[in-house]
Length: 320
Image (cartoon, rainbow, N blue to C red; front, side, top):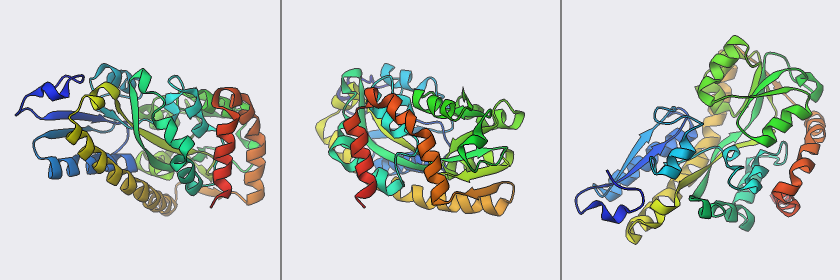
């Protein structure tokens, strides 16, 4: 087995092994991206590089995957952007509620100088960002209809391990419950939590719509991923291998982000067709009420994230 620190020492015949672990289904944008990466590497790099994909928390779950990357037990992950606050607090910007109007604004910000700088901001901690992968804009689901902010009071919402998301629900006077992704369906089914926030693709692929009576199309935040690698592993690769992998990843990233839109549109319709959840569409005025109710969260984290970075993100809304 290849040592993560010295890939060039693997020998002439031993392939460079890239273990790509993730926590979602193969059918999601991230799942499809991992499989496309595996396929293109096999087609273009032959036996020189071997990509092994482990979906659905089959190798490491939410709580262990970052540690596994830093130890070199896996070489590639695409964690939710909510997972990086302890490595760089500025990345919390992606969790701020109602900051981005839509996915196009997210695209513009991620392509900006400020967005690209965040990819390289954790290299000193052993983590190198290779790109942003979309999952999509998040929707609020619950066993109660959520039309206005006060409707969320007292409900228990599953959240990722993110201080911003924790505060988001506290601001609504709801109760945030940190829970690994693999446990969410059962949590919703048994009433350990009453609601969650996910893109349509997660709601559909994990069958959350079966155990949630209402889904509010809030588009209140983005659930994107940062494709990352172990910096020592990546920088130790032969230059030609690294170059070829980078080209493949750029191609995969563009495809993932196009697919994310299509998959979310498809899955939204599939949930409507299933008829198990009522879809609540907010008026522009209602959406603005939610934004104003949650704007104090922006202020609370401004010192950690940076006022200039938040301003750059807001500018991306009007740049279309």
